[in-house]
Each structure stands twice: as structure tokens, then as C-alpha cells.
Length: 52
Length: 265
Image (cartoon, rainbow over all chains, first blue to last red; front, side, top):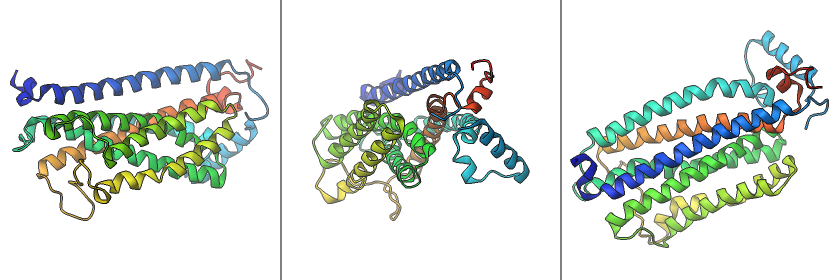
């Protein structure tokens, strides 16, 4: 419990670390979605002779 | 890109035995290279984060002035460094893209933008949560914070500009110019604490002077800085792969890689 309280600064310390963890998780999830969408797009595009 | 060209390059690389920079500048060669590298950087980033958090919370003692609130700097300082460093790397790729008109340089710049915005946001957020207990305010319009906020808007601006232009090569050039012009903000952020009388304190760590902090705290900060650096490399390599797939779709090597050669014609 002492550790979570952070000497009275728990709100600030865990607010900083918590939001950092959340936005990094969000970036990783959006990256996975981006990669899946790009792979789908590439897979449904017919091969062309001239480069796009 | 014509399939024949790709095969020729592949064959010559096999004979030569080594990869040279000109070959790596081709998206077809860089795509598998990025895919091989990214997981190693991700693993390194994860291990360094665990080590950094262990040092930051397990070993580093309580600060005698700031109490436990100072532990926020273990993310604040590394992400603030990264927010500026990523922008400089984008500027480097943008200069290459404009000078040599290379697609891959522009894609590398593009792949870094979201990570740069992320680092800037985290730096601002953690700075606010550190400032409140330490300075008594979440935010002040001083030179350091205002210029860092402008950096966030620059990242958003580059993203918006790319979305606004349909033609990818034109978007490359426009974004490169905006990135290079905006780079003037980086020295302003870095030197703001010397040039103006800011609420934000001067640098605790610099290249030229001895660090003004306990070495175990410095160690935790440096480990976290490397974690942020490797994380950014891993994420941008994975992202550049997606960008290559989007922009080079229809090229023979992609159809071959996805096992579609001939079938989709």
C-alpha cells in the first residue's frame, strides 16, 4: 500500500505512468490494425506492370 | 517496379555476399530487412523497460526535495529527448527524400510521425503531472513548454498534410518541406531554458558538464531513454513495412511475397 501511495504523490506518479502505458498500448494496437489493413489492401490489388 | 528488376537485384546481391546501401534503399530489399530487425529492437526495448522500471522504482532512493514525485522523470526526460530526436531523424530523411528523390526515405520519415507525436504527448503529459506537485502548476506558457507544444502541432501538421494530398509523391515533397522548415523549432526547444527565463529548469544532464543528479537516478533515466529509442525503432520499422505494402501494392515482388503471383492478374 505504501508503494501505491508514493509518499502522497500517487495520483501524479501513477497518472503519468498509467497514461503512458495506455497510449503506448494504443499505438501498438493501431499499428497492428494498420499492418493488417495494409496486407489486405496489397493482397486485393492486382499486380500491375508499371509501378504505382 | 518491374519484377525483372527485382530479380536482377536479388541475384547480384547473392553473388556479392554483402548488402550495400543502394540496394537497401529499394523498398523490395528493405521490406524483409525491416521485418527481420524489428522484433530484436522490440525485445531489447521490453527488457530495457523492465530494467529501467526496476532501477526507477526498486533501487533509486526517494529524492530529498521532491519526494516520490521525481520518479516521473524516468519517463518525462527520455520521451522529451525522443520527441526532439525523432523530429531530427525525420528532418534527415526529408532532406534525403528531397535531394535524391528516394521513395524509401520519405516512407521512413512518414513512419516516424506518429511515434514522434506520441513521445511529445507523453513528455507534455508527464511534465504537467510532475509540475503540479513540484512547481504548483500543471502548465505555464513558458518558452520550453510552449515550444514543445508547437512540436506536437508540427507532428499533427505533417500527418494532416499527408492526409490532405492524394498523390503520394507530392505528399512526400510537401511533408519533407514542412518537416525541414519546422526543424527550426528543435534548437528553440533545446536552448529555450538558456535563452529565456523559463519556469522549466535548465538541463540536469548535458554533453558538456557533469550531470547534476545522483548516478543511480541518471542510470535509470538512461536505461529508459534506450528503451524509448529501441521501441521507436521497432515500431517505425513495422510501420514502414505497412507503408511499403500500401504504396508499392501491385508491384511484382509484393504479389510474389504474398503468394499471389499470377493468380490476381
